[in-house]
Length: 258
Ligand code: ZZB
Image 1 (tube, protein in one colour):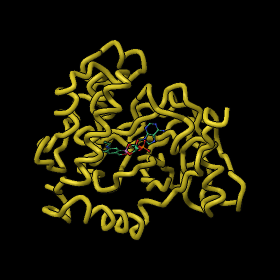
Image 2 (cartoon, helix red, strand yellow):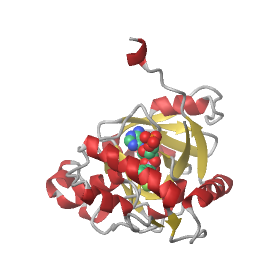
Image 3 (cartoon, rainbow, N blue to C red):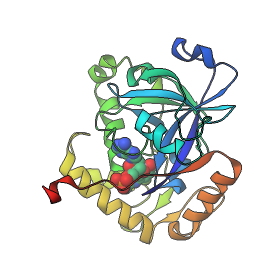
Image 4 (cartoon, rainbow, N blue to C red):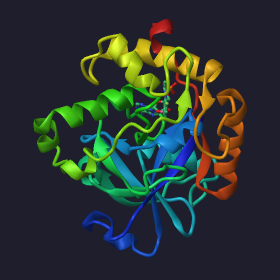
């Protein structure tokens, strides 16, 4: 599986945990398969109990992600020390909540790191960028934070990190309109981010239709078909240096061999 890693830059001033990294470029590195949706980012997701680290990628850049992802990156020429992750600090997801970020292509100039409880730590980087217009998981996780003050309180999430951020329409799908994730979540009567089975179905539907029938309604490639502009936007991000490629080794399917 090949992901695009989006470099979501931590905006200064750095919090205590990152103080010794002042002068470097520190990024939350989010793995995505949908680079064409980056215009619609409203926040970043981290797992509150997740274990992350700040890893030196080269002389200037530091990526915050899981140590598992750092090891994979080290074998893909993305570590200051070849084939060896170089960790400057261990950081928990809780430490990241509320970090202000600048993310490529996003219409929102600053977005915040917020808690998502369903992040898998054995996939991608454990950091996920949020596009609630087109990702049902993101739509429901954001909706949970918007509608549940107790959830915000539990994770120390300030209102201003969540409430001003509305769904940004970026892609039109004839069947679903231009907020496809919201529409599919409503149609399937999905209640929360924990509604796993229905969310898997919603994701399947929006992935497929977004790719085959989607048209961009914003940005440099406005009017273009998602299928056609996806590689163009990906290359643009890679060329300007705001994203890098990241390959995930195939997982062994233990249940099949017993
Ligand atoms: C932005 C985005 C916009 C995404 C969208 C999806 C959609 P897959 O196919 O299962 O590999 N993701 C990445 N890492 C994780 C993780 N560790 N835990 C949970 N979610 C993760 O799915 C890859 C997608 O799952 C990635 O692409 C990321 O969210 C999320 F409009 O990034 B995506 C219909 C989906 N739409």
